[in-house]
Length: 119
Length: 119
DNA sequence: CTGGATCCCGAGCGATACTG
DNA sequence: CAGTATCGCTCGGGATCCAG
Image 1 (cartoon, rainbow over the protein chains, first blue to last red):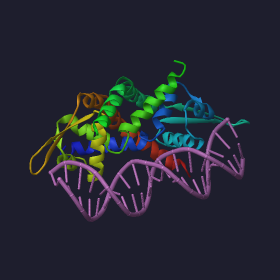
Image 2 (image 1 turned 180 degrees about the vertical axis):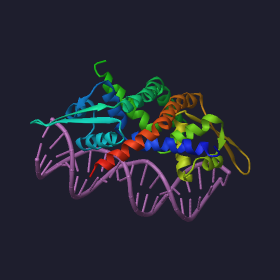
Image 3 (image 1 turned 120 degrees about the vertical axis):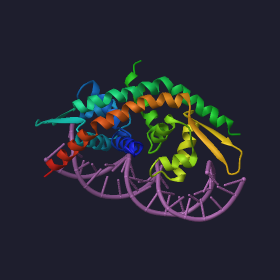
Image 4 (image 1 turned 120 degrees about the horizontal axis):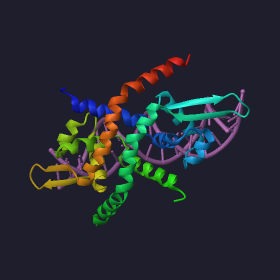
């Protein structure tokens, strides 16, 4: 208990290193709705490259947040879905998204005011 | 409204680019408790460098999440505190921290299982 | 004590080309 | 369609030195 602050800090750091990258939360967010195929995801997430989608999905799968189901057909078909763990993560994430939506303007204003004050 | 998904994606991206860096959430987390001085913060946040603390505080101040009060003394004394906006951000952040604390083990286990399966 | 400037390395990520 | 491999660039961020 002497280092409760410290362990919380580690938890935040760990969390960020897992899902704090550029795309993970967006994928979680998309798969929270319903399962999707690879190309479907790529079209849904604006700006993500082929390479990064693959990599992001691998990491999420590795962490048990996303499940991968491939069907041995020609052409190949692979479905990605959020696991229970992934869906449970989506809840607090949505909290952050709501905060961002609500306070987005405040931040922009503050930033402009701050920059304007730099004369 | 035709691109509601898209705008949400932008919001997530914006949020991440603001507070998704290595240290911002930790500083928010510390200042949520009570205001602190520069050196005090540096000691409290394990591993943060002088340079990054300065930079992180500047960005948070710029976005209106943290307030800076300097006292013209010798030696200089500067107090940093979370603004109302900063404190309101801390709430959903704490939700994420709780999730991380609760599911940290699940992720670690999933990761080990995944790696073990790669034979 | 607080804060800025400079140098530099490595991670992250995009582009591209190639496989089954 | 889904996934892998290589290259190269940008930039986050640590170390260090200087200043008020």
